[in-house]
Length: 427
Length: 165
Image 1 (cartoon, rainbow over the protein chains, first blue to last red):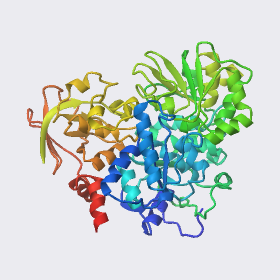
Image 2: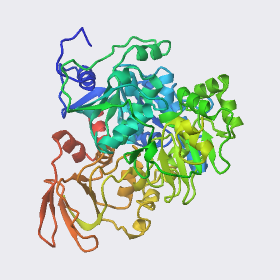
Image 3: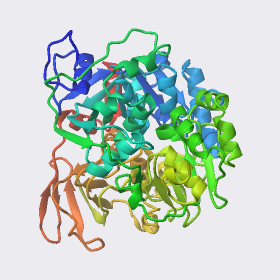
Image 4: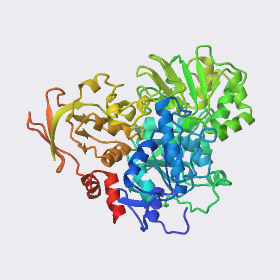
């Protein structure tokens, strides 16, 4: 509850945008032009932005410290064309003195990296030329994905225009069952409302389950708001948020909260005490079934990682399941720690040893197979079970391959079993 | 401006991976991208589409990834405009920003026949006419700010004019 300001019937995003636009209040549907605290791109989207930016013929960006460039999609460079793209980004960072440029060996998948590096804080306005920019709502920021041209304009002006989104509130009641995680909450939600159920809208995640959900779980949930069409997803800042920010964000910030009388477009209440792990069947993230109804699905590849589920908590639970076990002889398991820091932490905690002993392949951080880029592409007819965020046609390779989405515990258990199973079956 | 062209019909939730698969994102050349437009869901499409053609789609067109390569590929193929019942928000921004004409038309156009029907589109007033049947549809007009963006030829030109002020 924001005690400094009287309630205005506004949800968090409306209040952030109103404050940044210098207005008392904004209403859903209103167009506002606001300064951004951070604008970033990657090796796929930044080269297009850089080309567009060159049309301004500027010898500086609006503020080099508010621009972040992370070559993470096709890096380590997968082919000559990708290397050329990455080179454009590297040269731009040098030319415009952009210090927040993260090279392989120091980097991570952008949406895991930026919060870890303290570049995200409550109340911030963040745009990224990547659809999963919505991840940062987990820290109480307004963060949304844009395209390359929007990034180019923001690099020049420091501003972006937005249509103020209406807010949908999702209240999660009950207690989180064992083996069920933030991933299952968001898959369940997408399954309920559909891939355009939150189109143009903000998604507020709240309730007792969210109050007790770890930061990693919250980041996973907000990460997939886009899979329901959401403009952003967020959790209002609380002790878990402040604990996470401790030692990462040193500058003062002002948390923003939804008013007690906030007007939501719609309120959804889910009791999740009996929720099972969820599986999203191809070819859409809203094609969700509880695990017990998945049937007997043999898999060829398992991917654990990505901006959705490559954080330390994800690796811990996967390692817990795989300890003293072997990956099924027919299955290829690839584990991608999402950042270099998480990678090191996983080594120190002995998780990487467990994966290697289990005969998994470990990769440096990269978006890699999540978008069918490299490091684990599927052949015709192959099936993958993945902790990533999308399972569209051809997402991980051949158009006739298939991707099923799940949480890290289910992915690890299924890698050992060779088919989609509940962790209880192998533990 | 009035456009007229052959139509290609697509369903709901056409995602940007379907529009242009990620394996082609190591280039941003619109012509190279156009050679793979819709390839994974309609392999024959890049060979059939001709400049001036119109894409007619259902709900949530362009959902998923923020890749601007999707509208670039559509533009590169010479598609004159995309009409959909609704657009995913990042695709909507991207199309306007790069000057690809899009129209949001809540009317059901799915009874139109690919191959035989053509559409005439008035980009100024959002009137969509099927010359064969004489049926008329209405697109939702853009708010004034976006009309200005479109009128200036996209976001870069719009920002340029503001930077000069």
